[in-house]
Amino acid sequence: MMTAKITQDSDDISQNPSVFTVILNFNNYSDTLETIASVYASDYDANTLILIENSTDEQITHNIRLRFPSLEIIQNSENLGYAGGNNVGVQEAIDRGAEYIFILNNDVILEKDVITKCIDALRQSPNCAACQPLISFDNDRKKIWSAGTQLFFGYPRLFLKGQSIIRNGAVKPPFGLVGCAIFFRVSALRDVGLFDASLFLMHEETDWCIRAKKRKFSLLVITSAVAYHKISATIGLLSREYLYYVGRNWLLVGRKNYDILNYGYILITEMTIRFPYYLYHLAKRGQINQIKYYLKGIIDGIRGVSGKADF
Image (cartoon, rainbow, N blue to C red; front, side):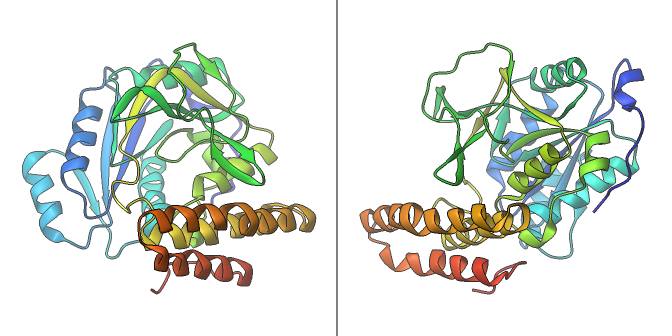
């Protein structure tokens, strides 16, 4: 984890600050192409795009290279998960002098002015560590998927989900940001550190936001900048991976960042609110047997097991 603190934000002295956009891919071809194309269509020119490949299917990487011959691709030797994979790209960007870093899921499509508006917002808010655009559903672009997160019975759920989009500037989220499109100030990354790679997948950004707020940084949602999200296009909603990591990792994050009373509250609400929630939705799908992955995640979270799961 990086902990060195710099004394002045480099973006304060740059007319056109250097941005590195990092896209992480795991065995997803068509969605990744759309995301890459939307970044290349951005109205901000001082942006370097890096694709981090966690993919185990070499043909996907080969085909992406054919479509975008000039695209810089870093091929990981194994699937490092969201945290480890993105950390590779973040470290590369920092080493090459990035002033801002944009972490972008490979199922997100940007409006062309998102990067410009995120830079403008952070330059006007020098204590802000990171921001996100307003995230809309890709299949219903007038509705919000996330304006950050809020704590709801001990869990960081999506804020303003399902409400109509209103483009009204920059606002502070009640709790944190979502990791599908998160725009970092590099000096804050140097202070707060990288993602916790031991989480592997899910809630890495939650942990990072908690750590940033502990260091008295603020966070912002730029509602005038909009991105469209296809929602779990890579891992699948209610897949075994989703159920396991969503159950395990919030317990690990809570245990790491909160006192025993707040951790106990998280554990109680996990079993009394979210366990019935997932059980209900799996039963509706005729997949109730999948609940075993969620329960395995809970058990491993209580035990403090981290890293990539062995299913």
